[in-house]
Image (cartoon, rainbow, N blue to C red):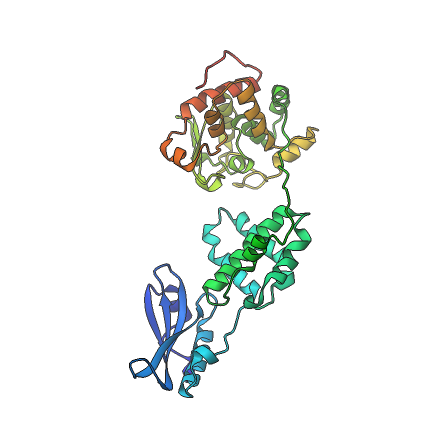
Length: 398
């Protein structure tokens, strides 16, 4: 057992910096500048010479440290040294332990956790594989996964759940690409081969639109909403006035609100665009917010639990209780957009920026640094006036 002990520990292996770190008996942990960690073993093959006539000393990869444990690396290194002492070159004689597709997928999920926009997106990523890929090929060695296995996962849902199937294909491809980069696969990715060969039928996706209320009906609806005291009603009023997304409003904290400058800055982590978004606050919006300060909560729209926001379904359930059929909360964004175009004649870029949409190409956005805050402030003030039944005088926006 002495051969299976060394200088390194599990904790050291996880925290050592860039470089080559010896464990003893020819085993090394290599930490790349990118942060990737991998095991290698250096052996001298008995009776074999290199091109210079010296004993053949060479390094062999044993796999990434995120997949191969310290104990497994020592075990494999011992196997390689024994082969080398018998004059067998490990490159041609070693039997590698290949992880399963599910093992690689779970590791990819863990490695990418810091990059997910939020925990929900990360969970959706692995859930898709869990539901549609793992039952078919999760236990297969990752180097055995080919086009037939991928098709077994995709074909049953390709037409009925096309968007899910498309995402599943992307995630399977990612797992297999990572497996190849770790040395567990070679050759073309079967997902790419299936796509290039057009094996699966072409599916024309139908655009799905959130059901929206006609802008003409909003003032009457808002008047009914204003008569309610529930927190969900306050949140829905604010959502309607700002044209914001549900998650942006429900996650709103008081620390994001600047009453003096009449601004709410929604942080990038909650924005679909991944950048901070400034929302100008009108008199009506401030009138909704001001009484809520007395609750002294971290969140502006507190739910049933202290210092926790309303649930994602709270506003939709309110619409149902009000017997407002065929309308979604997200649909009020479309309502605002229609009004901005048909009534306010707002310039496209002003209306789109009010909804936190990206406007123009990457190059155009690089030069257009302004978020048109003051023009958006005028538009939102006019929208608030219309929603509250007081259209007031026409203000030119642009």
